[in-house]
Amino acid sequence: MILAIDVGGTKMAAGLVGRDGAVVRALRAATPQDADADSLWKTLLDLVEPLAAEARVEGVGVGCGGPMTWPDGEVSPLNIPGWRAFPLRAALAGRFPGLPVRLHNDAVCLAVAEHWKGAGQGARDMLGMVVSTGVGGGLVLGGRLIDGGTGNAGHIGHVVVEPEGGPPCGCGGHGCLEAVARGPALTRWAESQGWTPGTYGGGDGLRTSTTTGDAGDAEGRSWAYREDRAVTGRALAADARAGDPVAVRAMRRAGRALGIAIASATHLCDLDVVTVGGGLSQAGDLLFGPLEEALREHARMEFARRVRVRPAALGQDAGLVGAAALLLAADRYWSPLR
Image (tube, rainbow, N blue to C red; front, side, top):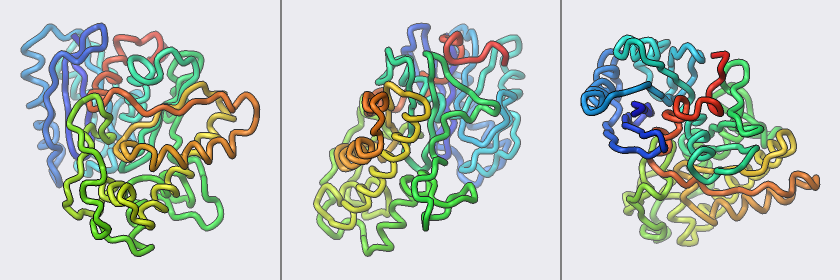
């Protein structure tokens, strides 16, 4: 078994993954908010220890939010302020002496999972995307994960889609895909246009799913909306489905930004497939309709027209599957030089 770990800002998960990529058992816990480094580490250990006691673990694979130093594995996740330059890989190596411990960005692990066992199986050249509280991705070319010099290849969230007058981005730039299409940015834009959640009668307009077959957001939660009137991407999509004109425009804005970014990536990398997961992707045609429209408008070179966009398939276990693949399919997803 591989011990797989998925660390996010709202939840941590750990699981045992067999050689076939199947998650045999998984445990999850809320990520402590405003916690210090030791409390966060203890929460993770409380998940890991019962699993380590159940099986002979042959290696440890980890997906974690960035930024991080890669492949050394010091992590400083933006949404986990208690960990700054936290030596996560070294700490796990100390707990599991003699075993390989491999760590990568969580969006990269999600992309790897979809290429290995999900919607991107069989593709030689694929971009895997996550659209949730942030926008990230991973790039597979020639059937192998492309890391880049710092492990950040495929970070499509910072492709510029609105160069003139685009919204400011957390990276310091303007008009990045993430600044336009990530859930919090999208709801802020909708509010600025007069949207108030739930007032259009869209409370039950979005399907509810608790199955692992439906992709949750980047941190694995299944898609659900129950008229809580919260300012969330879920609420925005529900109101769009109910016909709220501002919500519809917001989803169209996000979809078109994604389509433009995918067209640029396709022209650069000659892609076969792009998989899109994360919470916002659960909006279905509200997002994918304008995405396809913009993609076909901008992917005009003949070779680029063949790209196909598919919803991610693996659901809340994707992060664990991708983390395990760093060891179980290392010939494709881990550089031998690392």
